[in-house]
Length: 409
Ligand code: ADP
Image 1 (cartoon, rainbow, N blue to C red):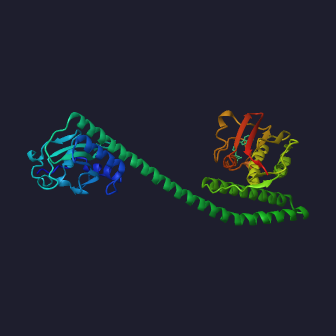
Image 2 (image 1 turned 90 degrees about the vertical axis):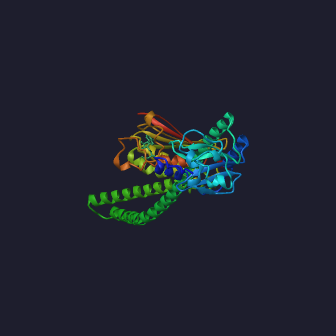
Image 3 (image 1 turned 120 degrees about the vertical axis):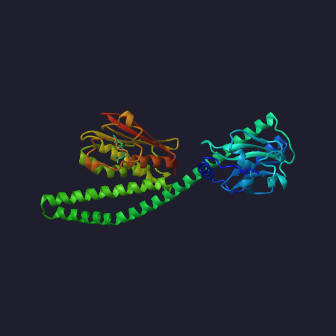
């Protein structure tokens, strides 16, 4: 008996085999279908998908054989993987390599063997697809072709299985990372909020005091700056938390009846303080026919409008106008925010909705946000099955249009 030598690249070959993670796994119908077909086409009682491991050959699929594996020294397949072409042994008793092989002398008493190497895309022969008979014979050209073709299918199946496994692993890793990130943000948010609330609370009280008391101008100014900065920091913390919630799929809608016009008035009131400071004229335009009550997540709709209006005011020079208009028909609420500001260049339009994207180089430092506002707007609108569009003329102004499906309550 001649024991097959190891390939010169044996170490890498074994690594290639390990990569598939297939050794000692359960039988799979896809592989069994191939051995069944091969045994039928070649008319042999035995057909195998054999993987040649360090010291053994292990059968991923077998027809007509009980053994799970055999020692590598006995394996016909260990010879077959040393050549690129199909290896045929018409009569093992007449082949010096196999004549005294226990698999020939005893059960299963192999006489005929035909094996095609399983060659991976990176050119390693990790095993064979083989047909075995207990009587001497030959392989017809068609049977040889079928054997070769099916062997390539085995490799395709292995590759497919590997890709699925990798995708699964990646998804699991991503899910884990996402969960960890959400936890981290939730914790961080909490940790940041406590000192922030203290700063906000105390500086508000201080602000009231310094308005009444006679204090030097720098104290007055200082308190205002602290209050503004703390407020912006609190807004950013909220934004980051929102985005991470959306990312983690944990943002849900709270639908309740609400008066849409009242909601818009409230947001305009909030933004009017900043608009006045900046000398921007803020208008709300409401048509005569508006429903008194619709059902939806008023808080999130308010957040969308607040983001768009704040941006509009932020990017519009003094003396110009910002207008919020609305319409309701066909069970849809349309909201429009139009400004006469700097506008957005056509090449930047697609980027503005991405997280952390800020376009305007000339944004004043004190109004700089996180670049998360529009990403949040888009995610919230998506969550409500709505749409958001933007048209802009650089130097003239921008209009954001949001359409949300909302039923009349
Ligand atoms: P932030 O306002 O925090 O920078 P946003 O996501 O709200 O982040 O906006 C992203 C970018 O889109 C802004 O930095 C700005 O460049 C641009 N942008 C948004 N709204 C307007 C607008 N009304 N006019 C001009 N540019 C705008």
